[in-house]
Image (cartoon, rainbow, N blue to C red):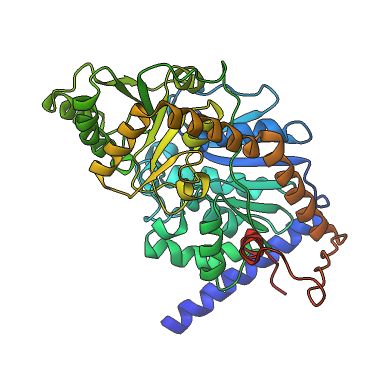
Length: 448
């Protein structure tokens, strides 16, 4: 029976590959004119959504951009959108309709998305069908996915004529082992994999036995924000994010007990919503911090709220590449952050544009916040450093990296790619070996 099953599976694989070859023969030539971006929930709120909107807006200058949202669970987007960017929704859950097939499949668990995917519970057999149909319908252009489950589906189902790019907003090391195993063997089918941090890039280089044609780090860009730079005269510390245990807000509130005792005239504002909101509200009451710690809820105008503060605090257990740090830097806030091994550690230079604190140490977090409150000169120096650092993440700077990537991927497909010549090393040695090592980690050359 096993031998028969293997033969059946082998026959299906041959049929699938033959179908792909026929589709490719009829497909238009390789192109980057059309860019399709797969996103879980375009009308939701979160850092990934905000950064995808930002990238889509930049690319819309030269490309036809479409954001393909798996779900639609709101009538209006939480974040402003560029009118040049088109939107498509695969599963409109606000209007389920009377289709009996949809009703039946929506009750069955997904078979396309791995159970280890963090958003697995958002998918079902109906979304599998809609997603698979959409991926197979794209015959040319660029198809980009923005989370592991969607990257895996794209790598498995996309036609060879399509340029595929996987984006990773979560560090590889934080993924379950079963997910990492799938990533090892399916990501090699991608044209490119884009990480946000150097640390994650290194992890992928060391983990993937066979790599995509291009493995590169492109960080997120600072999104457009309203207003100007913070004046740093408000006695307010702020943090923004989804209220999950990962964000560590329970630790921040505990640390604020010490801060409030030393500086009762300062306030902490935690913007966001999520499953931990009730627990955090109760913790504030139990600690006697009413009026000193506020939970105003989510905000669509992050810039306006940051401008009203003087300190930004990040208390997450770990982060991929926290957009809120970039936004706080661009607003000229002094930043205090746990020293997560990926995003914060790479984004912040300790004592220059922020303070890095040993992770999960409430007392150290409190003392660092108090230090910034009490030392106005330090607060302003950190804020000035943060503002300077933010310029390296301007949308035009990051956008040019995407332009270069798309141009290279197209050249690889149409046969015009010329591998850059490596500089001679016999006569000249780099002045800074550490800098050479960092540069080598930026981009992995394609497998021969």
